[in-house]
Image (cartoon, rainbow, N blue to C red; front, top):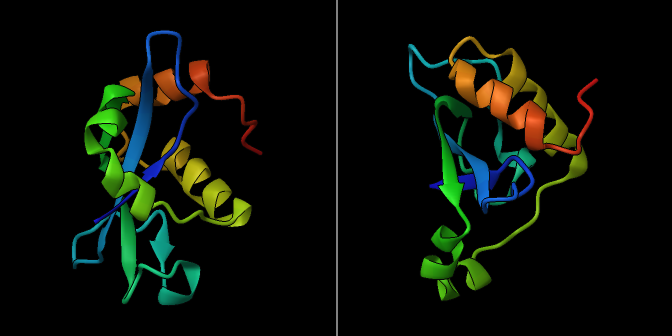
Length: 109
């Protein structure tokens, strides 16, 4: 699975991630991704805003080497599309919408 870090790290070491998953019949289609959007995407996929997670920085420390190997960047345009979808998706947990607005330096337009 491809996870995308969606927020800055807060003062307590937490940040938000979202998951990219295969598009299914009843999937939230707020943000649909295609193979040309990222090299890890092989077929139509969606961002699972309902599975967004607030994680602690120790998550990366525990993952260690794997993240050094699998750390491809996404384009700014794709990041912005995913970020804006996070705020607009009806599937995003409300508490996480409030949280991201309090910690992110990005200004969604």
